[in-house]
Image 1 (cartoon, rainbow, N blue to C red):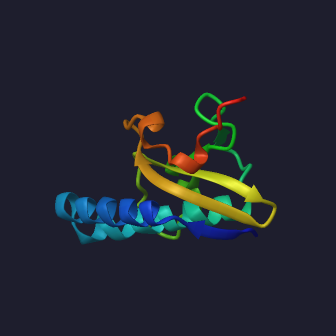
Image 2 (image 1 turned 45 degrees about the vertical axis):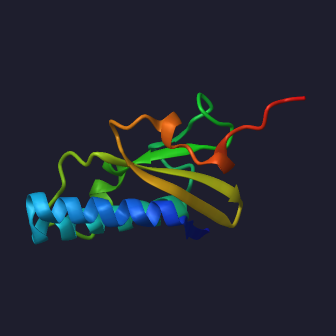
Image 3 (image 1 turned 90 degrees about the vertical axis):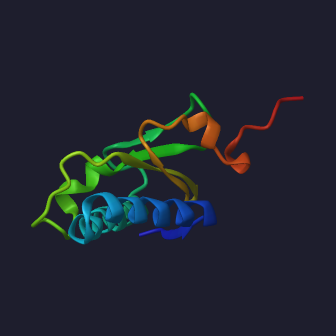
Length: 125
């Protein structure tokens, strides 16, 4: 299992997601969604190339995404399955021992707009 580093922006995303979920769906759903996010983080730390992980060469040579949907069956909150999670992890495998999560974004968001500067490819020349 790789070391997982969660960027400050991803931590803020997580706080906002869980706060919004709590306000709109209640404590029980918030806890289940939190459990699903924790499971997804664990899953990509365990194997960044796992099923559902996508290289995003369309926006960056290092960016990958992983939709929470792919961790539903592994989530510890099986008694309340989140049927249609709407978020994905934006991350990169820095090396064999480190996975860095830059953002946790809603799947309707423009990924290019929220791509951290350090993920952007350097212009050639």
